[in-house]
Length: 538
Image: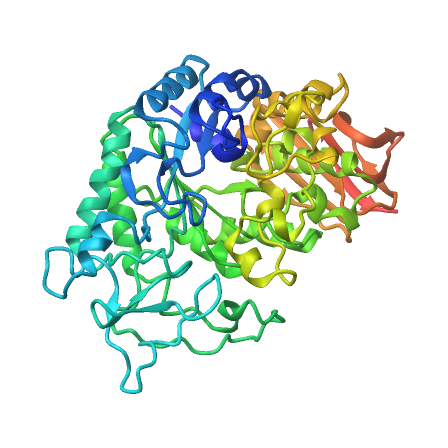
């Protein structure tokens, strides 16, 4: 039996911004439950919820203060149970963000750990003495700026934090920490959760010897805010011990039926594809993984081909998860605007590309509306990096603004109160109730349905064609069906010659006439053929 997740479409819900049902301006679990039909009607198979656990919200829930409690902002355990029940009734699986590498400094574990060097939790976090001159133990940087070490006068030591100083890193070298973390995961599996999205999955372990990182092997062109990228982050993450923990997690999930874990690999470039392969190899680690490889500005044939082929080579028995947008990056319709004819043509092209990729597909709330990033002023920001580094860093708030439901309702139907981030006119214009019969929402529904009905797209192997930029082309082959998918990644038209019998199965801004395939700007076509065809540039 083929596991449900292997060809699934996973819909990411950012709870703060999906639907507010209690009028406080922040989305909640009851709101998500009320809108489940929307997710089901798109054709999604699973919902990924960003963090909903108790948190002071310094980093919007990625700073957990109690792994076993729902944050009152979102509701309570009864609301969670109702959401699970409602989703399952509609055939939807539910996975939740698990932020395991660090906690909030408000967590009871950390409160006890910082009291002394000899209490029961003293070694649950990464503590180290200052160097003789009082400086931090290593040269490691924090993602959010400054050193990755914060001095705590109560213990007279530094503690490690990869993100905010209020997000101390757990010490996974301590087996008691690992056992405690696994117990929290079991709690949610026992309540009916279908799996986990594991945040920063390669950050769990640090170098026990606390060695400093060398400079980056090839110095990236970075802003002064991105000191993290100026090091080869060899000792602060992606340590070999990570694999043993993933195997413990997999052993836990294998005690249940139909559970899936997808890990977020916090790395850029080709190295991220290698880690994805390593972490999903075999049957004893993650079910699948994704990275930021397709979440950046690169939009060219070489990049997409390298990502997919790199994973094929690195993990021939692994499984990838591909997405173009999420809560951490600018929305792809805006991010790739320079390569598009219009917002709608890019939305359609990106959708068709995603639905043709081998593996599991992720879409981010509002993506199915062709949503764009929101332009915000400094006074409207909430994201810590943006608040610190503005205007050099715009932050992540632009992709986190509320979901839009009814164009003419206050806040486009998201909330009767003042939203935590504003709903602006360009975003409201794309509301669900304003989508037309031939709009982006209908297009996503059709594309997802087509993918699900296609053996080639759900199970077929991928073979790339050699064509010049900007034409991305590959064949998906299954015993029952063969498709060749051809995409024009530029706003200029291109013409190709097709030798052999082929018909157009699915297309936009494309025509196939007497062996000539014409692709307008951002045009694409899925070509169906029973025997081999040849495609060449004209």
